[in-house]
Length: 310
Image (cartoon, rainbow, N blue to C red):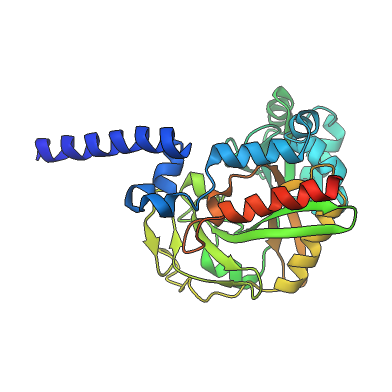
């Protein structure tokens, strides 16, 4: 058994090095995109994390990219699309903090600069030492975010998390926004976040219909025909209010400084709201669960952007 284990470790180790040298694939790419089971020709169809970052750097300036990694800066530009109350630790007074928790029994605490759901906590304000909690809030740059009540169909998938739609867009000109791809993100278990990198599931969405195309996948490539907790079938699940979501995300894109963005959108009963706008956003989530590689699509986007800049 030990020999068997070492054989597999050696195989994957060599595979990781080989794929990095010849395809610029990171360790995450190797497993998330399941490159270990793909042919050489098939691997060439996939955009790697490094290539995705290069595209983001081609589209947007470094100054804007770095600035809008801050949630506070992002929400400042896109405030009208959040449709909920937020507090920022750097500017918040004790009186404002008391007023906020007087209206909300719970909220999400989010570090200002962090990705993949890192550091997010649900804060409950009943029977709380307000001044101690305020001191904790003021300790680091952070956002306190009013909870979103999601659409009942999405809540049924995994009630503990807000299960969002991630949509990648790029603005090609003054009046043109192209939707690159979309995925449904679903939490798993009692987690409050739906992030793929934190144990959540991803289902590829047909942009034309808003329907999940195949079984969902997690970050290690395990497939799920139904949600492991709710037992709801994932393939064929139709995202509610889909056309409204597409129009909403295009409006967000046309009113933002960053031109290449991965949008996290929460769907409510009669509308949708912005959760976050992610610089870069890791295109792996729109290349798994049956979506297929998007390298050719990004190559065409380079051409369109170059043409628009002339």
